[in-house]
Amino acid sequence: MRLFTAIDIPDEVREKLRSLTTELMPTAPLAWSPAANWHVTTKFIGDFSDGSAMEAALAAVRVPGFDVEIRGLGWYPNPHQPRVFFAGVAAPEELGDLHDQTDAVCGRLGVPRETKRYSPHLTLARIKIPVPLVEMRRVIGDLPTIDFGKFHVGSFWLYASRMGPEGSIYRRLKEFPLG
Image (cartoon, rainbow, N blue to C red; front, side):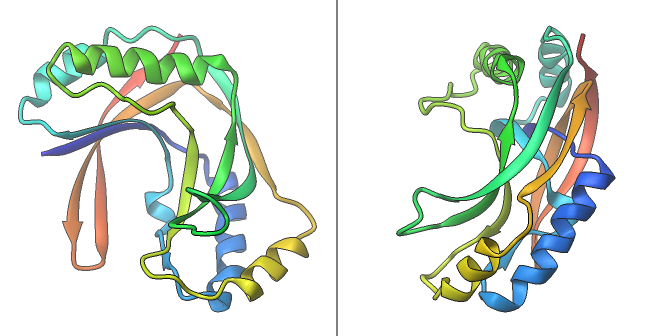
């Protein structure tokens, strides 16, 4: 099964982002992520068959809870040739520690370690083929705010992912408390 770990976002933040994407959707034909799928990935694990071993490994992660802000909008890998449209994640070093520890315990189970620097974000849409973004950029520039909310992270989740006819379908498997 295909696995990843992530932190969830609260409904208040999700609603602000849903309002934003509803406004932006008519401006560009992107592959918009369903609001139910929004999360902040802390580690992509990939295909892994032993769920109980993964759960036991993740239970060893020890990071204190922390606050996260969802603010700002951006493009990966860059604004000139974007492939992903995202909301930014501002967090203290504990989020990086969560990523590093998760990466380490997964590595002990044979999951490849990350080679790129961890860059937390919340994917709102994917750009599969180049499309005009002039109108979308204009609407974004006219927004009164690009701050979507602050919340406390007290746990992270192990998720399973499978492809469906409309894209990825995520299922929560187990919650791991922080602190």
